[in-house]
Length: 366
Ligand SMILES: NC(=O)c1ccc[n+]([C@@H]2O[C@H](COP(=O)([O-])OP(=O)(O)OC[C@H]3O[C@@H](n4cnc5c(N)ncnc54)[C@H](O)[C@@H]3O)[C@@H](O)[C@H]2O)c1
Ligand SMILES: O=C(O)C(=O)C[C@@H](O)[C@H](O)[C@H](O)COP(=O)(O)O
Ligand SMILES: [Zn+2]
Image (cartoon, rainbow, N blue to C red; front, side, top):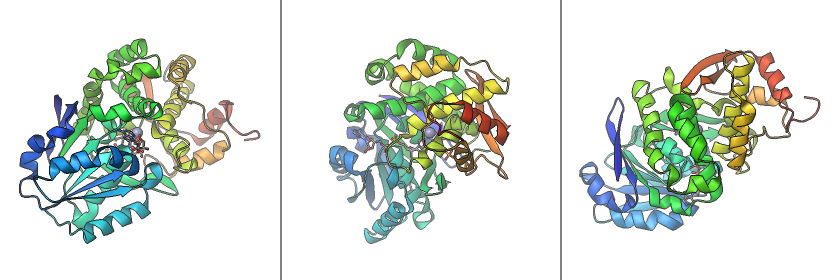
């Protein structure tokens, strides 16, 4: 088992990474669970069926446990699920000494974390990530839900008490989810670590490479990139925004898809990163060979085209809901070269031109 520590203002917390971490819950969390009154496991239908009973049995000797299950998929990150879970907390008698376990991918981490952040003005929670993508989402304390008008618009910073990353659970992930999670790993490399990026480009050329043990040693490295940024800027007053590389357009793509599973978070971020590279090239800030980057992502099976059916103007209006935008002005994370990110306000007419230039997928007449 590997371990690293995330340093946040309210508390530092451990991230345990390795096979069968889940089954070591009792020994790993003994101190954190001392004096706790009750645990609620929040999970989704897929993950619940596979792992909720395992986790329940691990916690059962230490404290009373209940399990709440929401439907799987992005649509569960909603006000309706949030309300239903708060009602469940009240019904189950959770009090200020209770603790929530977020068992699942990023959707569950964000949703359950937001319930924990707000129930009785905040109770502790533990992240138990089960997707590759959740190596990103389980660390750093961003919790929240979507609004039908925009992605992640409602939320809170609330750091977990611990992260239990059992890599054995990844074995049941569908290929598409492996790929989706890999997008965030690539993102960490693009913004922070040129040597890591080089290694990924040379060694990860297919979905099979993502799924095999090849990337396992790099999970800790990818999490460390995030943890270092969070330590420097927990509440996104500055450098934490770099973790949003690819997300300005990515979030708009997810919102326009209707949070319905047509596009995963990682797929949207991958397309968003390619677009951001085109923007920075256009501004003369970089010299990316975007077609080469696209080729790599396509070889891994990513659909990197901007989805068809929406006009450039629709993307721009949707991106204006991005939390990095101020007074309607759009701010992008750009990367000059691997490891050198920057924040840049980008003129609307330029985005309009670039979105329209990206002929693939755009509706005619935009
Ligand atoms: N808070 C953050 O810092 C942060 C960072 C990155 C992404 N996110 C958010 O994370 C979400 C995406 O997370 P995700 O990609 O993990 O999606 P997800 O949680 O929806 O999981 C993807 C799918 O895989 C299934 N699944 C999960 N674990 C499984 C397993 N071990 N075996 C089989 N199936 C399994 C789920 O049921 C779901 O259908 C987005 O909402 C995104 O905004 C948050
Ligand atoms: O932790 C962060 O900070 C990130 O930006 C990580 C992103 O990968 C993640 O998708 C996050 O949820 C985006 O946050 P938002 O503030 O742009 O909604
Ligand atoms: Zn993300």
